[in-house]
Amino acid sequence: MKPVLLLVPGMFNTGAIWDRVRHQLEPEVDVRTAQVLTQDSIPAMAADAWQCLADVPADHPVTLCGFSMGGYVVIEMLARPARALHAAALLDSSAGIETEQSLLVREKTISALQRNFERTVEGIIPYSLHPDHAADPDLVPAMRSMMHAVGAEAAMRQTRALMVRSDHRAALARLQLPVLVACGRHDRVTPPELSEDLAALIPGARLVWLESAGHQTPLECAPELAALLRALALGQTAT
Image (tube, rainbow, N blue to C red; front, side, top):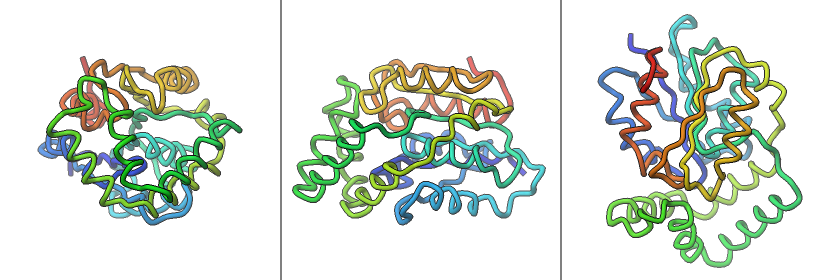
């Protein structure tokens, strides 16, 4: 049985966010994808993600990987583990909790989604990509299609879930497993300093910068990310 890698999408993502990464891993790794579109809280997303691993023997190596909001789901899973884990990866995410300012931003996002969904989508796409990718003829339509597939209601539900997530920094500081923290060097959604803080919090965490990416690392630099996740899942040293 191959090592298992559970991928957790971020906000406004279907499982398609992982397609470019998954296709480069599947010959060697059993890749599974959690669904985070229907739940109303981060703990509920984590509970459903654990169900994706229900058939995996307790002693079999399992690696968790969460992107953006999916990172918060993986942090919830690490704080309240339902089984032993081999490793974890947190991509373009953070360990922080909401502030008064960030809560205002979340409320504005909800209002924008309610007022004009299409315009909000068109604003998010270039903001979350590296400037070199903002007009990419493959990436931009793929993002647009995925975000429209998610829809406003699910995106608002996810935003509200983020607003009330728990503070698990103390649990992260006690982790005793390999953790990869990776972030697009040009990420404006969860800026690099948040990944620096996250890596500093977790004992022995490895911090990697994805130089040619903004926030959408699974789309923008899939080969590099796949190599990092393959090495993590297989217990190898990535170069």
